[in-house]
Image 1 (cartoon, one colour):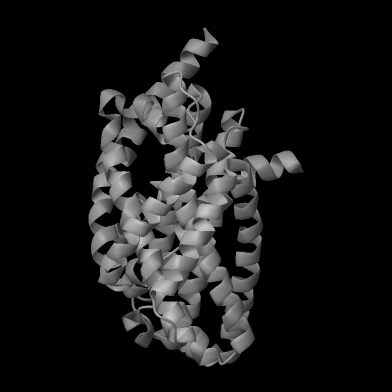
Image 2 (cartoon, rainbow, N blue to C red):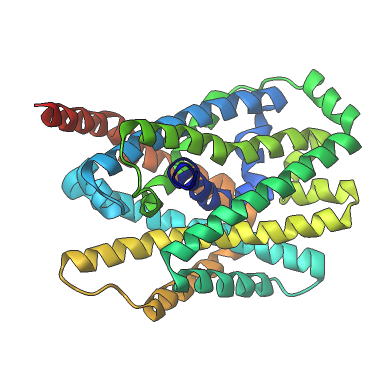
Length: 365
């Protein structure tokens, strides 16, 4: 059972943790890429995104297994050769954007719910992210697995409550909603920048030993990562289309439920997802630095240096959070997605598949 969890569930749980913060955890990302196209259009778009993520996740895990690469720098050396640095340029930009999004969301919640200055949210997130990264990969992996379980419990309670309180509104939204054009491209768009988390979390897939395990973990991981988005999308039918214009859609629906205890649990889980996303991205960057140093016969960076890098990254991105959640997600995520399609998705489906087949043919000789 422990091996099953480690091979098939942990990669998806960590992938979800990196994906879910900010726009995903607040629901704004779900609005932009799914609900915006109608209730049924959003479902179709989500199906496209799930298939795309499953394909990219599976192939990436197989490349990691075959070539024994567990950080994004060495992964893209296999995929792009000398041009590997192109991914790093994009991923650093996306990393700063993601941290800015979760910083903006944390500040908004602290300000709206508790009446505190918005920077308190960023400070809380900074302390938690630095603490997790200080204790390293194993501690981070265990925290992510545990928090994913908590996340599903709270989101399930949230979805059940929405169905109990707004059954007629949800039924009407499903029966009257149209399928807006653009849902297919939006599903691809969503997947193109979210799959960028996969090379970052390769430190968690070292136990995969066969193609069956790689593809199984990839498919299950895609489902684990997308199911919370499906739950949020369905819940937004309770106040559709008014929910489309809110910056914190899940928070908006919770206010309609009038359930303070559940809302507080949600806020706790949401802050946890912010911390997971920040810590998961930073851990991927730290793994890349440590592996580079080892390749050059140098010692890994100390825990203190890891913490200082985390402080610098979160602090710098906090300055971007003043731009606001809606504009950061709609403009920032949308633009950078096409760059990742060119640098990651297309090479994976062409060069990556070719190298996997070639490696397997050599092994069989």
